[in-house]
Length: 554
Image 1 (tube, rainbow, N blue to C red):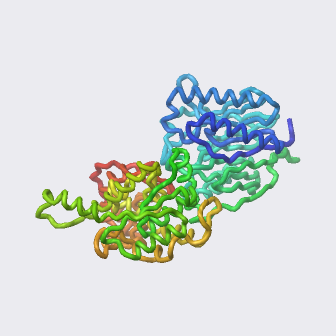
Image 2 (cartoon, rainbow, N blue to C red; image 1 turned 90 degrees about the vertical axis):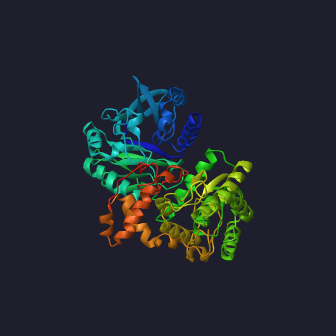
C-alpha cells in the first residue's frame, strides 16, 4: 500500500447532453493533472452527461452513447497516466443508476452507485434513478476511499457504513446548486459533522456553471480529520486543485494544507449566480446576445448590468420605449445607464401604437372608461416590440421583473413578462436594491463589464414606478417594499400562515391581501420565463402550487 496519493480535484463546468464535449474536457483536464503528477483525477457528479439531466436521461440513446464515451475514457486511461473517477449514468437490469466509475489502466476498476436520491425542491432523482446499495469503499493503490455521492454525504449512516467497511478517506462528488447561505450549510452542517462522526478527512467536490434555472457555485473544499480546512477552492470559477494525501504515523490519512480561496459574500454571491446562469444559458442555447427594455428604472438597469457582466457590452442591446407617460428623468436615466455600460440604446416611441389600439378597440370598449386594460396594452405593445427585435435579429429577450412583483402579480402577462430568461426572477425588490448598490461600488471578478458605477444613483433612490399612467408609483398598488418583502418571505420562503406573519408585527389586513394576491397570480407565474434560482423557494422548481386553489389561511 502506498503512503501518499496526489489527487486532482477538478471543479469544472459541464453541458447537459453534450457527451462528447464533456468527455473531451475531462481528457484535457487529465493531461493537465498528469503534468502536475496526479495519481487520480476526480470530477463532479454526473460529469459525463451533465447535471441535472431531468427526463433526458430516460432516453435509451443517451444512456447508450454515455456508455460509448465512458469506454473512450477507459481506453485513454491505459496510457499509464492518472486514474479518473467519473460520474455517469449506467443502466442495469432495466434500472438507471447515478454512478461514479473508477477508470484506471485501461479498465473499469470500480463502480459505485448513489444510495440516497434527493426528491425535494429542485431535485427529482427518485423519478429517474434507482437507489444503489450502501456503498463499499473503492480500493486504489491499496488505499480504501469512500465515495458518498452528493446527497449520500448528507446522511450520517452512509459515511458511517463506509467507515465501518474500512474507508480511510472520503471523496464526495457533487452537483449542488447555489442557494444563499448554502456555503455554511455544506461545510458546518454537513461535511464537518461527517468528519466529526467518522474521524475521516473529506474532499467535497462541486461543479460550476449554469443549467437552466440553476447556478452551481463550485466552492469545493477539503476538511481534515481534525475538522481543519485544508483546501478551499474559489467559487464561480473552474479550477483544478492538486491535493496531496499522506498516511500519518497513527495510520490515519490527512491532506496537506493548500490555498484557502476567499468566497464571495452576500450580495456579491447573488450577483455572480446571475452572471454565471445567464452567460451559460445564452451561450449554450446559441443566442447572439440579449435585448431588453431599458425603462430608466432599477430593475431594467440591474438586468442590463448583469447582462453586460455576463456577455460583454457588445452583446447587449437596450431599447427605450417611451409613452406619453414617460418622464424626462426616465429618459435621462436610461440614456445614462446605457452610456455607463457601453451598450447600444435605441428609442422606439409607442404612442402611435397606443392610438391604433384605442381606435381599433373603440367600438367594443364604447361606454367604458380607461382603466388597467389600457395600462396593460402599453406593456404588451412593448413586449411585442421587443419580441419583434428578438425574432428579426436573433437576440434573446431578457425579462426584467423581480420576485416581489411576480409574487403578487404586479406584472403584465404577455407584456413585461414576455421573454426567454430573467435574472431577477428569484430576487425580491429589496435584494434588487442591495445588488444595485453593490454593483455601483464594486466590479465582479468574473464579469465582462466596466469598472465603476453602472447606473445613476437616482435610479436607486427614486420611487419605483411602471409609468403606465400619470404620476403612477408602485406604492399606489402595493405596500412599501420594505414591508412587502418580509411578508412575502414569510408566506413564500417559510410557508407561514397569515396569523404567523401577523405575529411578526405586520398588519393583518395587509398580510391577508398579499396572501390572496400571491395565490391568484399563480397562473401568471406558470407562464413566466425561466430565471436563476437564488433562494430556497423559487417559483417553478421549488414552490409548485396548483393554479386552481381555494385554500387561504386568512
